[in-house]
Length: 111
Image 1 (tube, one colour):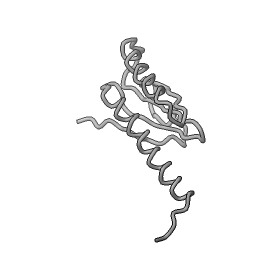
Image 2: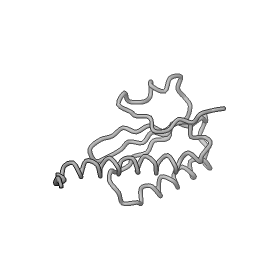
Image 3: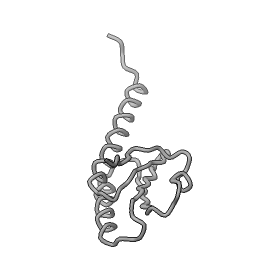
């Protein structure tokens, strides 16, 4: 039997934990019809989560729902720290507002 190196096991655990976190974020926000897509920027101890919305002006009720979901995700006491931004459709090209290192984790398919 070949011994398992700690570094390899830790890497696999980290990858599984990352996939689970992505899944938790997607499952929490995909139920909101106004959520068009979700992107993340990964840093060592933080994920910047960018939620692109399909609305053009502020909606108090929608923001309450989004912030409730954010609160639930933040209270899981897991690493990394999550920092959320909610951006309405006030842009022509989403890459004008997204950082080039942003990774898509969810895109709503219309139709």
